[in-house]
Length: 153
Image (cartoon, rainbow, N blue to C red; front, side, top):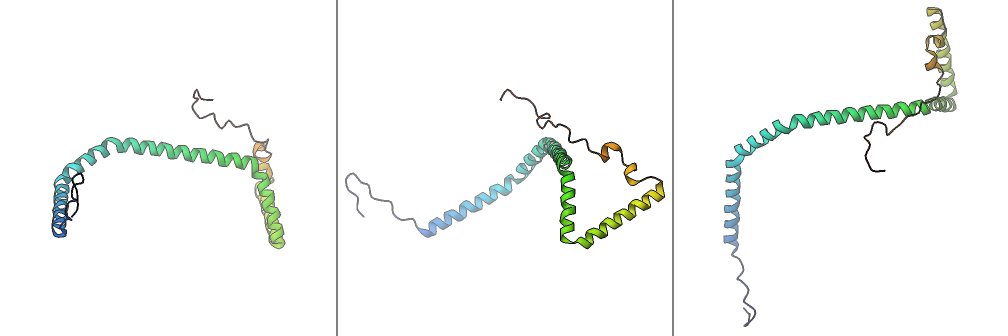
């Protein structure tokens, strides 16, 4: 099958029966090794889990708590800045979509305010602290304040 003085002849094609037998033998030996080593691997996994899992869970709890805190702070900041505008926009949209529902809601609100005044002897607005009634505007927030400082500018 060819070949010359400088080119060696190619190897003969593999015998499919021998190749499948070799694959089967390799697969069986791999499975046997896996089954044999499984208790050692399980013990190693357990040792690693005992060593690293508590720390990892603690870090995950801290990170999720920080995420929740940051998202709550961001939500409060947005609400502080945009809350009045949002509520006015919602009322305008409600009035445009369904004027009779808007009127009903306003009437129910006035009725609730009157009932509150009769029951407690003061208007509902009087029961709300002054700083909550009239927002003095959003306080200045330093978003980078909680982050550690690095030498990078």
